[in-house]
Image (tube, rainbow, N blue to C red; front, side, top):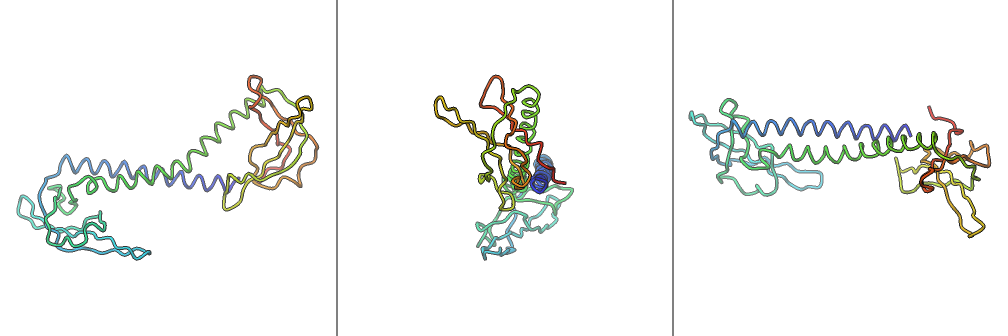
Length: 232
């Protein structure tokens, strides 16, 4: 459980940092648009980056002239395979007259590319880390309410199984299973505990477990496994 919380916490922190980067780069992009001067530059060279899978990305090196006749050369932070073979071609440029070397390609991705990338990664990492945390908080409140207001019943423990729908470091948590056999209609009502992140088998010292049933909805319940030891 602790390892799971650490991993989710890392994802959440990284996601928040990416989102912070999104805000900062978005502000920078808006500032460039508001203060920037549009001009046309020439692609004079390409900086080639080769990834691990041998694919190539081309980052244009652009030269342009400012309004006060300064010749400025800069390497675009945005690149891709589409720039292959573009040396000598004109390209739209946006620059801040106070910081002309911080110029960018005058396009949506040229101005806001980092914001888009940071936003995508920030959203993904935040959702991976944040959604389980939010669900955990909701479940914790629900369980506390059922412990306080639910109807307790004693149910026989019938087994232990792994919840293979979840994997943390290639390991699945355990759940205690308790069944009620309604002989009148010959059906089994199965109850499952919340996820347990260690094998509880050696620590089960009883035949029955207490389950708290919601008075308004019998399908909502909480299995009390507080008799199990806590991991430090």
